[in-house]
Each structure stands twice: as C-alpha cells, then as structure tokens.
Length: 340
Length: 266
Image 1 (tube, each protein chain N blue to C red):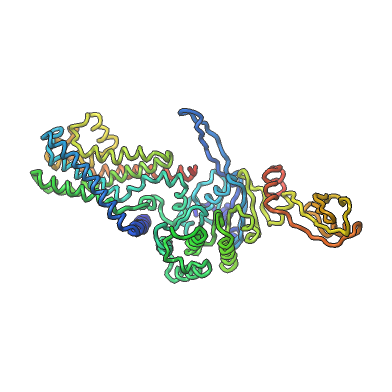
Image 2 (cartoon, rainbow over the protein chains, first blue to last red):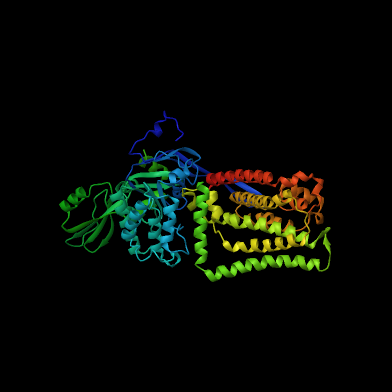
C-alpha cells in the first residue's frame, strides 16, 4: 500500500471490506460517422458511485443492460482502472495491485467460463492449485467441500465441453473458490440455468456465506436470486446508484403498491377507501391497490368496519415491476430519496 | 520468475488439451511441416532455372532460408498465439486472464501454445543442415560462435515483433493481418538474399525494423560476404544488442497497450 496514512479512507475498518468513494469511469467512445470521420463522445459508465460493503455481506447489484454493473465489477477486480474517485478492496487498490488482489478475490463470469474446454474438470482445478500456490492440504479440503456441496463428484473426470450449462456453472464457481477468496464476485451466476441448477447454485452460495463468511457481490437479472440470497440490494442505472438498502425498501422508493384482495358477502359497488383504489371487481371479490408503505392492518380495519367482509389476503408487489417503474420513472427524484 | 512459471503452467495445459485429439495433433504437425517444406520447394524450382539469386548460389540461399525459418519458428512456437489477442479483446475473455495472479503477458504468450509449430523448426533445421554441409565455410571460432547467437537473437527479435503487434491490437483489434505482414512477411523476406531487394527496403529492414540482424547480417559474416549497406564487420555481432533493444521497446509497447485497455475496456 502506497497511500498516505492521513487519508481517512484507508483506515482499516473491518466492517468496510469494499469501499467506493465517488468512483467514476468515463469512456471515450468513438463512433464512425463516415469514411475516416469519427465522432468522439464521452460516456459516463459509472458516475460518482459511493458505497461500502462489510465483510460477510451478501449484496445484489442490479440494473438494466449497460447500466454500469459490469464496469463496476471490472473496477473492483482490478481489470479496469477508475477514471476518478477512490476504491479499495480489503485495503488494496485493485487497479494498482491487481495480482496481489487476485489471491484474495474470486470471480465468476456467468457467460465466460474459465475452465479448460477439452480437459477433464479436475485439470482446471489442478491448474488453480498451482497458479494460486494453494497449500496442498487446503486445496484438498476446499476441493472436497466444493465437490460435495456442488455435487461435482461424477463430473471431475469429464471434459468440460461435455458438461451442461448448469454443471459448468457449478464447476466455475468451485474453480473460483479453491484459493479461499474473501470476496466472491458473480456476474450473472444463474443466467440460462434450469430451475434445479439455479436452486443448487443459490443453496451453495447461501451456505458459503453463512459458513465461511465469504462476502458475496452478485449481478443478476433474476430477482429471485436477490430475493433468496441478498439482504441488501443496490440498483444502478445510467451509471448512478439509484437505491441501496434492503429489498423491502425498494418498494417504497419504486412507489410500488400492494394489493388487498377482499371477498365480500355479496356483490357490491367498488369500495371507496382512499388512498386505496379498486383495480378489479369479480363478483363479490374486489382487488384494492394501496401504497406499499401504508399499513395493511389499518386499511383492513377500515374496510371491515364498513363492508361485510368474508375473507381477505394481501399480495406483495412484484419486484420486477417495481424496478421497471423505477427505471422508467423520475430517475433523479428516486435517486434523491434512495441514496442519502 | 512468476511470469515464466505461469507460462509453463498454461503451456502445459495447452499441450494436454492438444493431446486430447492425438490424431488431429499428428496431422496438423505434419501439415505444418509439409507446408513449410513446399515453401522451400519453390526456391528449389527457381534454382532449376538459374544458378544464383542476386549473386547467391542455392546452398547460401538455403543458409538464409534455414536461419530465418529456425529463428522465426522458435519465436512462433514460444509466443506465436499472441497474434490472436485481438480476438480475446473483442470477445471479452481477456478479462478472465486479468483476474489471475500472474502477469498478463505471460498468460497471453502461453495462450494456445501449440507443439505442432515444431514442424517449421524441424524443416528449417533440415534446410540449415543441408546448407552447412553444402557451403564451404571457412570456420573460425567467431563464426562458429555467431551461429547460435544469431539463432537466439533472431528468435528474440521476432518475439519482440509479436509482442509489439499484440500490443497494437489493444488499440486496433482487427490488426492481426497487419502483424502477419511483419512476422510471416518478414520471415519470408529474410529467406532471400538482400541483393535482390532495393536499397531503400534493405535500409528499412536494417534501421527501422531491424530484421536484417536475424539473417542477412550474421549470414553475410559467416559466409564471408560483404555486410549489406557496406556496414563494418563488427555489426555482425550486434544481434544480441539489437534484440535486447527490440524486446525492451516491445515491453514498453505492451505496457502502454495494456494500460490503454484497462482504462478504456475495449
């Protein structure tokens, strides 16, 4: 580390394992506009993003394509050099000390396998063993553990090209963990996998995080990944952090609505109960949408007081719709509220 | 050194990968040998009509040919796959190398390491062997010493060209054809006597892209011919120095290229 001790940012705090302080990445995009003519345009792929991740956290990093997710991951792993701001992972400046950092991080690129196509799976692991100089006993132990939990036993002697997508993904995750990384980055770890493979991968990640305390940062398009794995979610769009907090809080920011489904004794005209509004009527059953932040209990009490209620249920909002609304809607407003 | 270690590890993996298809390996190695051999047959055919090319008889042209092939073949075997770097940049697989605890240059150099390239070295060695037997060289200790020095320096100069070309592909990903012009093109150029080329070209190949130090200059000394461009005899011992400078410059170019990749990501 070649940094000034005076810098507050470098102070070692166990709870700030990953630190980003106004990190930027600006690309100079050159577009061909004619023969030999080129137009230069600045693209802010990552625009002043700040966040910290504590050791042992499991964070979902989501956003539409081109939002800046991959660029952030590439800066965190030392592949790309930030254009501005400060970034530390385990106290290391990733772009300056790429190889030193490499020993402490694991990376899984969902669509790019790092396994050796024509060789049995075990050969790729042997290469990791030697390249990362993993002590023999430690390598054995980690491999056995991954083989057991990811169910790779029958696959070790199979050439990688013969593995299914799900098997290969499990193989890739194991490859990224043999050297005991403190943090695991996963870029779309469940993309293209079937339901069973997804469940296996998620189960393993949960286990890894709980047992080993490995910090996990994953980008995904699959909100079930987030729902099942991450207590914290970060939403990025146009290079800006739009939301950072628990999954539940996302609903409030996205101005999402919950739905109260009530079964009345008989068919009645639509219930009038602001701020709730009836969105659907089917015989005696009515659907009332109300802001997710409002108390469902209060609403139920009011409806029960005025209408002959037989049965009811509350439906949580669809997160995908929430995020879509967030992207589409007033981006700047939402950001203002979401990220202090 | 960490780089050499990574190179060895990855190279070994590629050899194992190739051995997964033994028949294919045998055939491509033979093909590599045969194609380069045909190359020399073309020269033989030419000499069935003429006695000398630019004043150089067949055995001496064979000497040039062998020296060039062996030097280029060694470089091609060691790091020839670097010309595919542009493809790795385009499809994004270069990123997977950047998260490994090993120098990227070593990883890229070992990429697709292919023993079939021994075919060219074998063929070049055979032609060089024929030349050494056929030419009546007045051997002195210095001339004898210059032979291995020239081969190693020549290989190093070609390696520098490969690395510099790969570095350029960070900026222009489809430049591998341009690189081929300098590597394969350069190796072919050097198989013919300097006297058949224009003076300007010989100058360019001596002072700009110093390929002349691979064959023309050391060969002229060993064969007792005048050094091209009227340069003094001691220049024949400059190849190690030239190779060193070339490698340093190529290393610099590589660093610049990699830095530009890591700041632009494209």
